[in-house]
Amino acid sequence: MRLVLASQSPSRRAILRSAGIEPHLHPTQVDEDAVRSRLAEGTPPAEVVAALARAKAQAVAQQYPQDVVVGCDSMLLLNGELQGKPHTEEETIRRWRAQAGRTAELLTGHCVLGPQGRTQVDTARTTITFAQATEADIAAYAATAEPWECAGAFTLEALGGWFIDRIEGDPSSVIGLSLPLVRRALYSFGLNVSDFWES
Image (cartoon, rainbow, N blue to C red; front, side, top):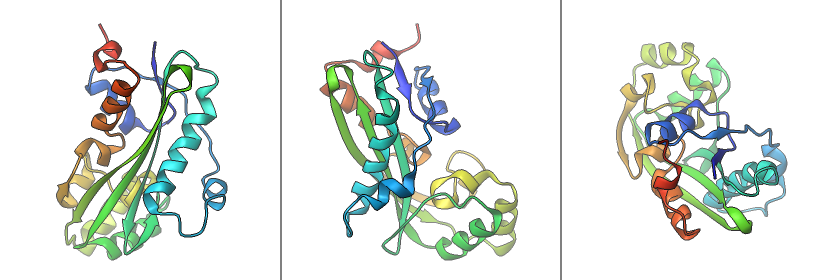
């Protein structure tokens, strides 16, 4: 039995590898806008990211009926609005001007699919306090391209770590995948985390 990661995120892979699991990678191409458009207006933010995670896991699950498939999606909740990846230098600068010195919540939806159609869907919530970064540092950070494909336009484990003053909650979920949440899902399937460790 393998753990299949329905993601191309190097950060999610690194979390699992550092925790003893070499995941089988099967990146998905899910139309996130289409998934969100099917949700009822006013759907709570935690349910939005959970729905996106479910779509990613389900997109590949039929190919791995005997394995555990994990899909994730992260978004930053700032001022009541969900924000995904900025994708560009200009948008990264705009986001950082809005969030510098502020506190927001990073939501990471998880869908864990086990053998025999077992499913666990949950969202990890972590509070992030952003530094009051200078304009020069915001511009320099945006120019690196590091945060362009990161929810909330930041990383915790790399250059962005300079600009995070505090986190409250699960640090692994900020990087992209909550180890405690996946552990609880595995236990609910009657599996052990150590079953997946590299020998």
